[in-house]
Image 1 (cartoon, helix red, strand yellow):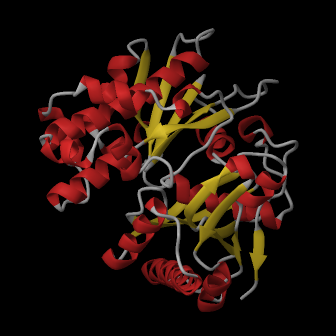
Image 2 (tube, rainbow, N blue to C red):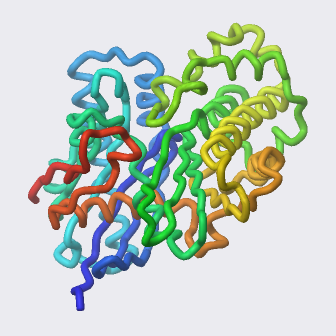
Length: 374
């Protein structure tokens, strides 16, 4: 019988709103969430990260300071989790830290995550695994998404499952049946919550549109929606991946001038951006499952699972599928990504390659991540 070990997974996603920390117990192929905490990023740090995503040019000194600041924030999140659980660092086998993606360019095999894993290891006294994406990219892969193989573990008992993670960017996992020769596939399909959240922050000073209540009141601006959907990314075949360095406010301004956007009622803008996300997700799911669309369940995780209006819009475009939150399968939608990186740390320490080549397009599966000792 495998010994149970405790791992902590850290995630700061494309929404750039918080650091999620998940404590998990892993024994063999079994993984169980023990505790979860989410720490809001300081406003000044969030602003720096968003500004860098939209204008990725920065002085080296500023870059290094941002790298260290975020590492300190990750370490503080770990310490907070340990306090809440009354555990010591010595009881944790390892931390798996995704970091914060500030640049993702698979066309040149480059993805950059900051958050100083060495500093996390030294400040917490816990071995830390990080920098996961570059191993896949060195083998010609997209370096994303990583979730499909983990989604298979969590949703294996649900036949013909489709899992959609809606963070700042939305990604889709089509889960292969257990014992099947088929492989999991997955890809980033386009913007998730990122543009909607930025609109509410810019025009209302609010972090997000709770439950999509404002979007629900708006009128979809079909001319704007059509222009946004003309972006070449949406017609690309998988494997493909993207990030906030692409689907951001300047991207929106290319389709419509700033003055026109500012003249739109916020409700209309949010309704249109919600529709864009819903259509991108639904269109890609229909294409990927065209040969076998019966009795399909679509499980939504990430922050988008908390947006009731958005889920309703996705369901509208997928009338023959059952669309629901991952909570209905026993997995809180906010915890899954942080759990993923705890599991990736476990796989790295056990030298286990991650079966991602069918997802990312890498030439082979690889052991992912670097190791930093305390």
